[in-house]
Image: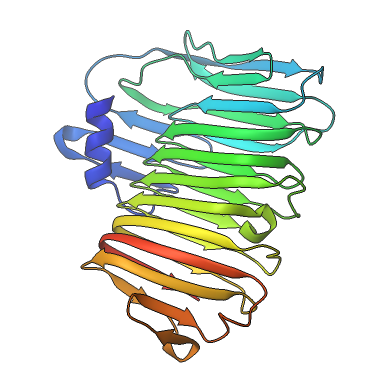
Length: 298
């Protein structure tokens, strides 16, 4: 699997959604709306009828919930549960597949259990719903997946995503009522779109992107200062910020480009500050590092 991921990170195309990627040595990965295709050799992997796996947990004495998700080669959906602490539904046609969804104390583990060998056009769909009554910390690791995370209405106190060769869509359509400490993203050879990051309200945002494309849309609802650290290599990041905030950009990168409206910024020794930086009620400070990296701020 490590060999496959290394090849993916070098050869995968920037846009994964709905495409088939041909890699060296005849390796092939396809990510569609409801199916994943992987061909990594001649080893056989048995497919059968579509099976459904369900797991629900009621709200107990938990004061918060730590969520650890480690699922790959899948389509993963996250949204709000109506009345449960957690409700999970998995559909797969992989013979012997037995997903783990285990609650121990205030820790919830969600994990697959099989090795990815020679598989074609299989289904592996995970629909995961979480309570809106408790603060949630998410730590998500996923590879070769298509992910749709709708955190609208959830109480998110911390979020971390490590993703390889994935297509990721995250949105916050309402104000997060929990104070979010940090929002961390590590994307290799994939796409990430985040909408409503101002509603999410993280104090710190850390972005590490390699051979990928990231777009962060903040919306108009920013009510605190934010710090954004971006490290990128052979990649592109776009930040869509409201005009009302003051923005500073400190650039510590080589062979990279910065795309801004220079009429709206003052150039300094170490970077740029927006014309309204000193007068703005809230400020966003951005530090950029990397090589062959493009940052667009608008």
